[in-house]
Amino acid sequence: MSDSDRSVLVTGAGSGMGEATARRFAATGANVLVVDLDEEGAAATVGAIEADGGTARSHVADVSDPAAVEGMIDRAAEAFGGLDVLHNNAGVPQESTPVEDVTEETWDATVDVNLKSAFLGAKYAVPELRESDAGVILNTASTAAIRPRTGLSAYVASKAGMVGLTKQLAYELADDGIRVNAICPVATDTPMLQDFAAGDLSVESMHDTIPLGRLCEPEDVAGAAVFLASEDASMITGTALEVDGGRDI
Ligand code: ADP
Image 1 (tube, rainbow, N blue to C red):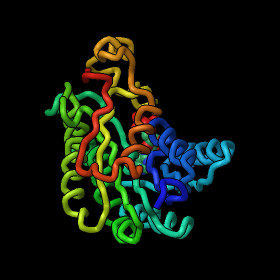
Image 2 (cartoon, rainbow, N blue to C red):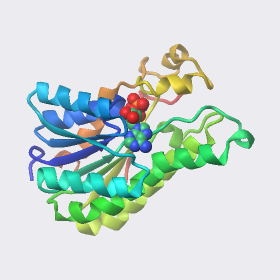
Image 3 (cartoon, rainbow, N blue to C red):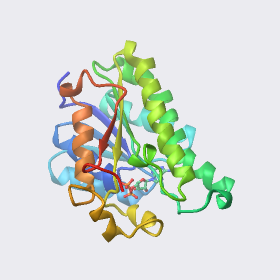
């Protein structure tokens, strides 16, 4: 299959990296299911794709809810005649907190949205992806998965888990022709970054710690996602691609 005309589902596509990625996939000719908890955000992304001449539908789902995840996979398959690419991208930040003060509720909520969602996505998508000529799963992790920072125990564990799950699924699903890769962005200029900025560093000081001299932009993540899902990446599976400008904060 060529990279156009594919059925692509991106979660967290109502904002930030997910929005940019959904738009970039649509620009390649893919049909995109834009999934988000935020109905308005999802609708706005679909509006932007359609204004550019692309094809997309919006779908509201909480990616930590098993029934909702099963429902979003069914919706993509029904709308676009199957599923070729699942991008588990929706995520939540964690307020920087010493581990002894992290509540179980914070731990569970962070891990459920950032990690369990990718397990659920794979669980329900694999039967559809197996039917594709070139099934792909992408998981948005973080450089924090590899280089931890102050007060982010739940976030870092969720993202490190995302890398581990990626490698396991790449191994497990290779026989089915399904490739699985993670993307590890450095501090990315999205609404979520403001939540981290109160922790170790201000947004301004983050620029100075990245050798290329700027934050990651949502489009940088979108470019990595479209590449990893493309035929050009057909020998790449189980990798965690760092999109970090040369070094982490
Ligand atoms: P980033 O792009 O850096 O991840 P954003 O906050 O811009 O940060 O985007 C994250 C997106 O994920 C938001 O649109 C948000 O509504 C979405 N999201 C957060 N939690 C969930 C969830 N449980 N289910 C679906 N989407 C979610």
